[in-house]
Amino acid sequence: MTAFGATEVLNQGPAQQEFLADVLAGMRQPNRALPCKYFYDERGSKLFDEICELDEYYPTRTELRIMDEYAQEIADQIGSGVRLVEYGSGSSIKTRILLDHLDSPAAYVPVDISQEHLQNTADVLNAAYPEIEILPVCADFTDRFELPKPAVEPSHSAVYFPGSTIGNLEPEEAVSLLMQISSLCGRGGGLVIGIDLEKDVSVLEAAYNDEAGVTAAFNLNLLRRINRELGADFKIGEYEHSARYNEDLGRIEIDLVSQTDQNVTIDGESFEVEANEAICTEYSHKYTIDGFATLAEKANLTLHRHWTDESEWFGVLHFVTTS
Image 1 (cartoon, rainbow, N blue to C red):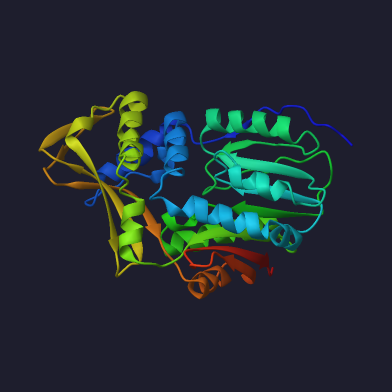
Image 2 (image 1 turned 30 degrees about the vertical axis):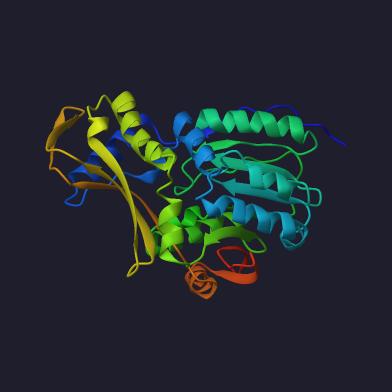
């Protein structure tokens, strides 16, 4: 059996100028917003790993239970000889469960926006799975990126997209990303995706307002990153984290709310921020199984099987490409 060595991250991530352009565009909007993809610098990635361990944050442990119970069934649905591409790989904890059950995967391609975090994860996985070629790609997976070619020709490609990250996108954006996934995999490919299901509002809001304040620190870290990397002067101590459920739109809305009137300068451009003004940093949409399947049909993806926990708080869905 071939043993593969460590692989350097293929960097296709957004450049600093793109980061600046996205931040300026978001601050110029009447309803200000900052792209949540920029949460994940090295510190942000570590804080998110901490969030996943919190008592209030049910999605990670619930999805892990589903993976533990149904990993073999899910792996059988994916099939043998696959090039497995993971969107937003993070620490790849759930992926290990899947890799342990896949039949002769041609390669594993973790895709993440945080290069340092991705390199660390790839190094760990190379040591743990020397028989699987690990081909990390630093990229914004909402944009098109080039897949690396493995040494062993794959039978097909499949995307693994755990963690309910698809919920961060507006419905039309979600369809666009699903179409990109369908195109990436091609006919005969597949998608295994995690989605957070509709549930009691008190459970949802507690998950994004933990008592320890880790989610707040994660949210505020976005401003720290903008200050550090773009030379901005957000007054971090004058912002508070806010997360609430919008029942009409079926989503958690996460904001940073200024507690005072202030002026913020970014790349020489000034922005007047009023007291109690919110900057939106993230949405997290919640779904039903049928509702998400209908959304995915618009991207030529057909629901093949799904698995949930006994409380039906979270779903892992397997789709196949139809064109």
